[in-house]
Image (tube, rainbow, N blue to C red; front, side):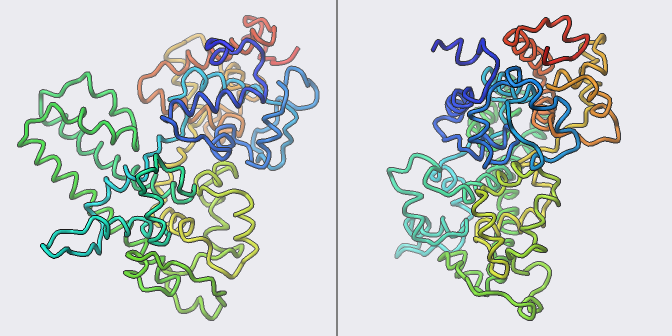
Length: 457
């Protein structure tokens, strides 16, 4: 298979192309594994249906077995997946060409995270000369993510090349920390760029990035500063990081420990997080609102997480880094506490709900997308909006309504549209090119398509 065929398929997109997408995305992530949770989130399908989607034909080959209008105002749990829909085909084509558009953060390795947070970690033992013992500090790494200190050795071993040895739930907590640190770094640096002349504009493209993709460019982004200015800047960034880490993140860990009837310092330093005892209604009365245990029962924060944050199930599983089996295992143990890393993340996000944006951005309303497109293409019609996003023209009017939420079929592309438009990327023209590539693969006339919006003959 040629490189051109890999990134620019000539046949209609079908489920088998997802294996190519996985390879392309992994090359962008620098060797990080793209898991089924990631692909399910991108395609916006439940992870237990992903295997079916990987075998699916293009919808052009199963015309009549699925409705082009399905997905508007519905949840994926009520949909079948007899074929790979046009909206998914456009998304796959776009990400094959531009894997950097995928809303999957570049994940740092465990050693990267350790190096970042090591100065803020508490409880390190002092050596005989008053120096901090590096090995003791390393032992305190895994407990910060709801695991035993023993796990620190594996996570920080010399042979560990990334976060692959960590569970997805632990990786999500690392993504949270890195994402918040990047937010503070970016906000402070942006202010300095406004206040001090002399920045190297050529290096500032990285400011469009977030998370680890931004933090790994710290040196190049601050290379224009004098030594004195850099010291002032670094001190301000470190203070902001330390304040959030101590007050917000460690505060959540302490509340989580109390919710497990565990001494907070023992949990944070040694990782003594386990408490499998059942919690009765009488037991619950002993806790306040901030320290209540997060259980598997139907009225717990865990069980109402998806609805509270208005996520699809694919998005909810991805944010929490859990498989469907784990979800139902927690639910079946209704009166027991859920796994510590998941509980920590759920507790944090309910305390600081705005930080859900570090994981899944809210999809942009169609009315805003339509306005942005018409600025670039005044001749673009409202009736063409839904066909641009992979469904029939009749869906355009609901999609573009100011009152309607973003429809299910457009969630991922709408989010990518907004993210890349804010970075000044030609995202409208890139999506349109992917649409027309798919039309050519299906043997459809593009001029006729932009008139009638029909994906099937």
